Image 1 (spheres, rainbow, N blue to C red):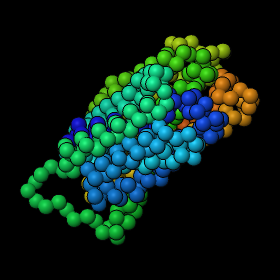
Image 2 (image 1 turned 180 degrees about the vertical axis):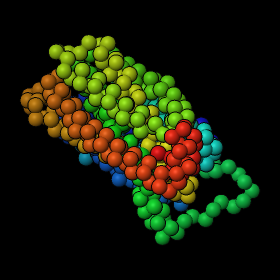
Image 3 (image 1 turned 90 degrees about the horizontal axis):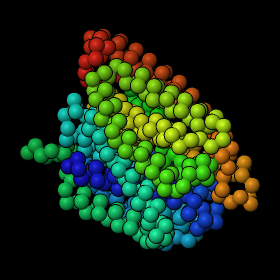
Image 4 (image 1 turned 90 degrees about the vertical axis):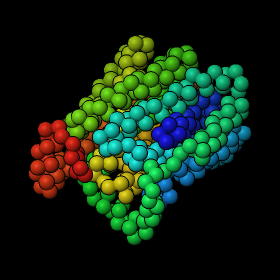
Length: 427
């Protein structure tokens, strides 16, 4: 069950990331600047973020299998349209379809994990899901660069559309929503119950802690992989395209290694999860500061260090889903997970737009898509505003969640501080 869902998620990550290494080609194909190019990813991410809570409600009602099939079909259709589009408006519609299908995928797989694995194994399995699914990003790096170079735009994205069809077929054949117990599945919740569940999930400080955890840890690596990392490395830092693609691949491979370690830490030391989140945020901010302040172009070893540090962002964002699971019952896990999953993508949307605007303001029109290193430096400096806001909110809701748990169940709070596992209310 997990393998089928994981393939669908890996395919979704591939579709989501496919524009990252095609940004320069897309700018030339459609004759657009940085701001309009950013709209491709923004349209995709806006739909993704806006659909998280509605998809969470649909997930609690219809189950993972149906949503995974619909999501894979939408993303395959989006890539098909992107392959043949020659007009900017059609290209944006294609990215919207990809964002809509992507929105249905990850939280559906998280629900499969929640229902098919015991609670003690859930943090590790969520991490494995997140980081192993990033193999899709790996497939969208070097292979797509080679395909674009050798086969051209249309064949490359037609091949990407075929991956969506493969995901549809595998989910239909292999996936079931929940283990067979001999009992009929529970009836879908009523609309009133859905609204009450969303209100209850939102009122939990731990759910909001998960949202801000996702916000503060995810956006830097997401923006780097999804759109602006490749142009920064090639146009700004002057790396050959193959080397830039290799760095993006290294980021994904490192995340796969780090994810299980972070999941194991969260299972053994749940009280200190928020400290780990803040440490991951600080490491990203410090490393970016060194890169941006380096006189001239940064050396390759420093850019490799940046990729290694950003690799921890993805597993760090997964901690937010652990908060959603521990603070909410299974009946509303879809909605709570959707709330958490909004955070990082809202931050990514703001940063993608901000970087595009700054690059256009600091780049002469005659330069086209050849953005200078100085323009990239000012553009990526926008990250620090988001880090400050996110870290402040993590501390705020961590304190609120701990305070609520201590008042509601002092024994559980004491057990949590000793490193023990408790039920809903773990912060």
